[in-house]
Length: 100
Image 1 (cartoon, rainbow, N blue to C red):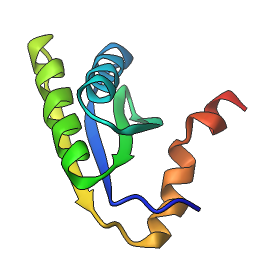
Image 2 (cartoon, one colour):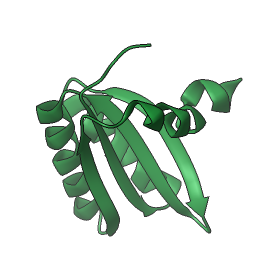
Image 3 (cartoon, rainbow, N blue to C red):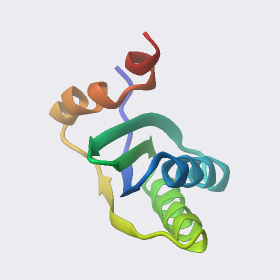
Image 4 (cartoon, one colour):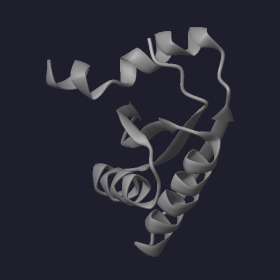
C-alpha cells in the first residue's frame, strides 16, 4: 500500500461541476484522482491524493473552477497525513470500483 501525505476533497452539486473540478485539480498539481461519490440527491464529492502542497493547490484550483462556472462549492478540505484507516473509506471512492 502506498502512503500519501494528504487527501484533497471538494463537494459540489452535479456531475458537470465535479468533472470540471477534477480536471482542474489534476491539471494544476501532481495529484492522483481517486474517484468521486454521489453523496445524495446530486451532491457529489471528488477526491485526490498527493503531497500536502499539491493537494492544497489542487483543491484551491478546483474550487475556483467550480465558482468560475457559476456554481457553489459546499465544502472542501485538505487532510494532511490522514490516519491509515482512512484507506478503508478511500477504497469506496475508487474509480476502479466504479468501472469494475
